[in-house]
Image 1 (spheres, rainbow, N blue to C red):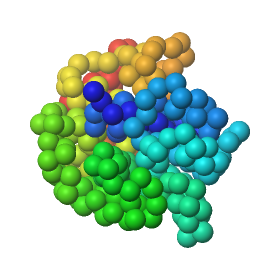
Image 2: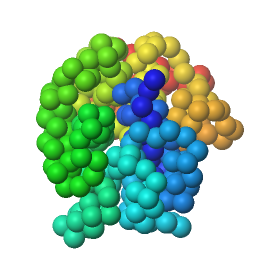
Image 3: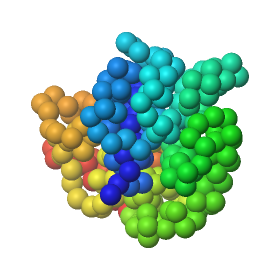
Length: 260
């Protein structure tokens, strides 16, 4: 059964990005826009680990962690734009198991989650700076290589690793990373969803409505303009000459296709 990650964060772009990476790594994800709703989700269903922002409406991250610790010892990792040492200390004293600053690498967050869950499952210390330090070390080690210190714990997921290729493009299905000639291409969550569709079916023509559905989960009238913006942004990052694209080609009157 997949482990469940709770994301308590009011920034939808961050929730979308983390959800994309975490589901790709085999986790189930639920999210809440504030601490009050996050506590309700903890009561309603089984949660294995929580990613918590500090600045949230209705109930901030610190108060959420304090309220959570009165009823649960699930691991909590703060993900915040606050970088002062005092903020880390307050968060850890409130009961957090770790602290990650924004902007972050989603792969590092994923590795951090694995390390904290492994220690929690093994019966280690449930909270405090000791776990934070150890988890951070494992997080960096795991994100630096294919297995890192996580090795055997990641074996089931690693066995499902698959790459989609098209010419000199490669898409890591598990880690959700697109590379061009071996170099990673930095894409947003929406752009990754579009490229995942393209890479799964090179040469297929996708309409704007289909690509909109890839990003948002369902088709919607008037979504074509946002797809055009996403395609333009992808081309700017991917193409050698965005004005003369050779990867993402416009098929007049129909949509777009990926050429190798």
